[in-house]
Image (cartoon, rainbow, N blue to C red; front, side, top):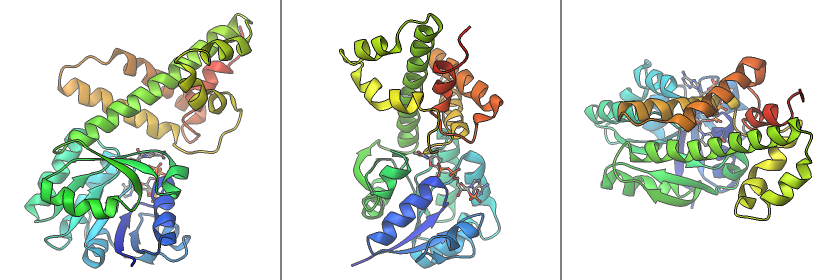
Length: 288
Ligand SMILES: NC(=O)c1ccc[n+]([C@@H]2O[C@H](COP(=O)([O-])OP(=O)(O)OC[C@H]3O[C@@H](n4cnc5c(N)ncnc54)[C@H](OP(=O)(O)O)[C@@H]3O)[C@@H](O)[C@H]2O)c1
């Protein structure tokens, strides 16, 4: 039998999760800052405020952009802090550890539970309910949250207490994006020397790096790619990684370099495009 699930944020990821949950027969009560995105998905029940989502569903999954969005959701009139005591917020967005800890503390003061559940995988994976969730929180809250998280993930990884899941998620995104930029730089060098790119692909596919080529090469080289994850959002995650590293006096030389590549791409107007464009502009840039 279908469950009642609350959803806040209907962007690329929230929209895909909403469609998946509806297809599975769940009742989904949703709120989005821009209300038209709720109406655009047939079958969603619209709540007028974030706190109404929690009042009607008991649990709300957040899929919002960044720390500012999280703070605004907490502070808004009829925001998350106005939700009924005993309700539960599951944060599947990617935030800094500091913002996530603050959210947990403030919600706890209002008697509201909080679980981190950031996800690995993009909108097509979300559409199929096959994301990987990384979860953190108090044991009781995690146990309660898992029934909902299990509806849009194929696997969950337990990262202990808040902000463990956000830390692991930022670490994973740094691995993904640093690797992508490394591939872009490698292709750039080969292209600038007019050496054959086919040889790079063949050599790269003949050793353990074949996974990188399988994952990123075609996506990076395609002159057009549908937006799965906005480049500006990837830059946000790299900046959050650096911010979280700085808090612990941990140097982040590689991620700092990757962030520059993403920021240069954004300055060239690619911020709203797919994040693979940060490597595409290296690999396919003018040959000098
Ligand atoms: N896309 C991916 O592949 C992917 C994968 C894993 C994790 N994530 C994470 O998932 C989250 C959502 O990503 P996305 O790709 O779905 O981004 P998106 O398409 O840009 O959607 C962002 C969502 O956040 C809402 N929002 C932004 N600022 C807000 C504010 N101040 N108050 C309330 N709502 C606000 C937007 O509302 P409006 O519609 O009104 O603008 C929209 O619903 C991010 O944290 C991202 O890092 C994304």
